[in-house]
Image (tube, rainbow, N blue to C red; front, top):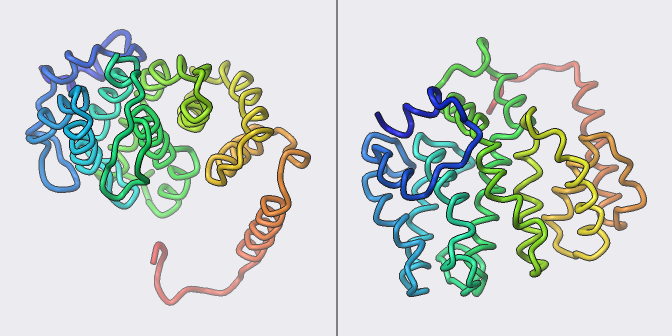
Length: 264
């Protein structure tokens, strides 16, 4: 039995497996990636834990690049995400050595890079993305891509269990990256009890951080969860919200037609 088969049979699907179990128990060659199959992933995933930062940097580029392309969730994305979540507390990752990954900002701790990837992947499978996809599918998004999104959504509690301990990390960059990763994961019904904690941390992030992308994401989550963010936004964010509201109103009032069916 592969790990992929066991996700639906495990009586405790919300527990995060050990990273060695994921590495050795997954039939990587049978899983689709952005570049074919995942047969090269075991070597790359092992490299994430190399004591050599050069090797680790290259491994991050390969491992994450294989399952990251145009906001798509692939067959191999789920076991890679579980593996990444499972190694967040590994001594090599916790040590905080910086990595340089092609196509990413340089000189950042591997822990931050991995958390940001988890967050980006979770946002690609969040409620809003699913709603948009299903809007254009006659039968609830039946294609392969949407099936992979649903598989990722099923394991959000397991991934969250790896991210949550880092919400109180001493390093602000780490804990803010963990918060942004945790927010879309907490859309899962079994994690709703954690939202109050995340909102409290979001308020602290908004009071201290100037990181635009992180601010937008926590503001969007707070609004979606019914919290007033008026006093937490800066001038640029307030103006962006007004523009977005105006565009949505214009879109909702549009009575014309399209020359072809969306998405275009």
